[in-house]
Length: 348
Image 1 (cartoon, rainbow, N blue to C red):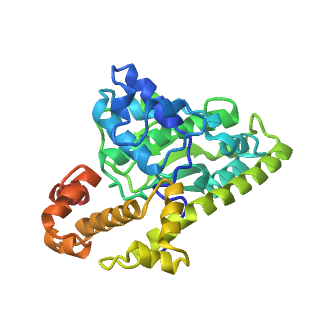
Image 2: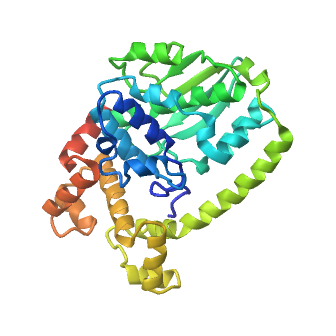
Image 3: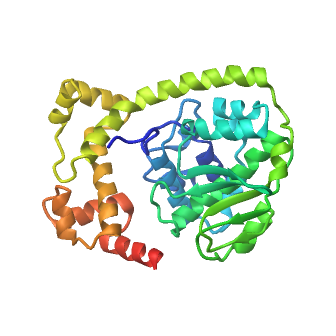
């Protein structure tokens, strides 16, 4: 079972979202160092052109922002500060698309050029068009972290729509799966439309009339050229991430019997030294990938089964339950028992 591109540890996105959060949190008296804790980033990297961040790093920073901020509308405000130019060539291609439907098709097809924290789908009915967002990373559809990610995405989506059309775009309605939040009024004030909580899906809805309107910077000739560049960049990105993905897939395919570095290298027709070096060039390692596999499996076991900590520890190759508990708390920030209780309460 091979990981789909991009993976959670692939560093493919500029750090603009994190930089915007840092600016807003500084207004609350928080330092960039506090926001970046455990992310592997420092404040200088936030403004370095070569810096790229992964989905995992974004989630770490978002979790820090949740704990640090006193502003319940922080994620929406940060999302609204994101401009389409922050997305580089991907954003420029969107900006020059000929029609709204062309831009939608491009956004979905080339979305892997940006870090993916949510699943994205577009649908159109006779009178409405809407984006649907799903919990592809299993954050917990009612968790605070998922809510923060979705709020950031809603703000970003509206900002990008405004850039493409050359004017503010107002949704007809927003629907979310979680229960009403204490800052529900901030949703309507910041997003400009009614919000319905406790729905079946997470959706950002617009009048279908929007799809008939012209785009402010449409330039089909330029769009064609930029799309070719995006195709080339996407091919290069997939090639750069493929080795780590293959290692991840091999480990995931044999839970409880994880092959060692030498065995995986042999399967990939290279020496263990070469594999170690190539993974290092991708800023990862066999142990980092193995830890990611163990974490994902542990979370699945705790959510979906009644296996004891001892049984999970044994199935993941830990010497005993205490070692597993210590590792899990380091990965997730809570004990296995607390994680299971939270998952159970979210499903209740």
